[in-house]
Length: 304
Image (cartoon, rainbow, N blue to C red; front, side):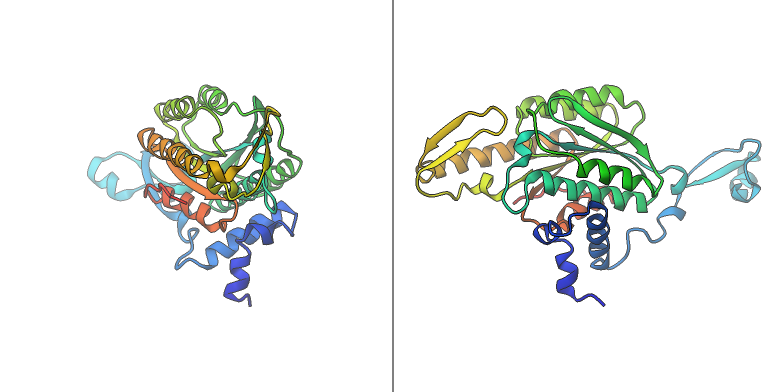
């Protein structure tokens, strides 16, 4: 039997990085997370009543709602959650800036998060798809609900490296035009793009009747600028360099970082998108809790 500490380790990004195999990581994260809940998110999920629809020839008689028939003299079929499962699209930013981070990079953390969310949703019999992007969409795996679909997702993630520039707003707008059926769009990114353009794209997704969750992944260094002495900073996407003493800039940097985060937090709220701010040092359960709170109808706008 696992101890509480061992279960917690299943959620620690640095511990997970030593496992290597993404499908194993996803299973450990979700099972470790679920074991800490008071009740399983899977219990009864697929037998909850959703809605009625008119009877069609060939429908099983056992699904007819006889109480409705007694009142209306019409046949209606009970539809359950398993008949109305969600179509989810997991979007992972694979631009060069996501490769930053010692121990666990933002991209590695994003892979763990995406693999875990995919496993969690497939356990709930939702359809899950994957979109990898930088300047353009690199890979698009359409949503499927088969349990075997997890392997296709994790193998694709394992081959992915951070490269290219970020064009998040462009890709979100293109996605809104491509996806015709209403679904859940989950964006995993460091959001290092023009906030106004990104938020406009999120609003467009909402107007297309998609639900949206934004997982904003940053490394602790980016939030706090803890460096001392003379440091050379290199832009991973544009190869520009700056040689400076960060301690002299720390106060102004942190002010601007707070402004940057507040812009996204408040903008997502206005765009009716959930916003979950994550550090690469955060246990993965914080991200999974953000997803589940959305599914339960509770808006989450977390702070570091």
